[in-house]
Image (cartoon, rainbow, N blue to C red):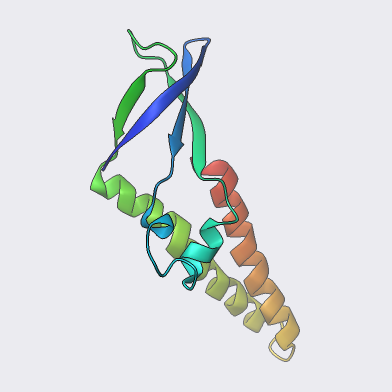
Length: 125
């Protein structure tokens, strides 16, 4: 998968890149009715991140970055499947330690789910 990024800043041998997400959710006629289209309205439509500076790159240039399909699959797994697995694992731990208290089982499941989402957001880049 290839994507074009704009170089918006260069500082200390690091270039800051910005990409406008132009997913299908903004172009589809069903975007008002599907969950992904509705959620897309509440989040930024651009991403900014840093990469090491490549020679000959200036502010305002467009650079192309490519990600392998294996890396894309792994990142999708981390984002979509891992939180669900941890939700069920947390609920399972709640069942082991609190077999008669369903509220604790639910709390363990959701704490694992949201904890994984937070870790994914801040530590997996």
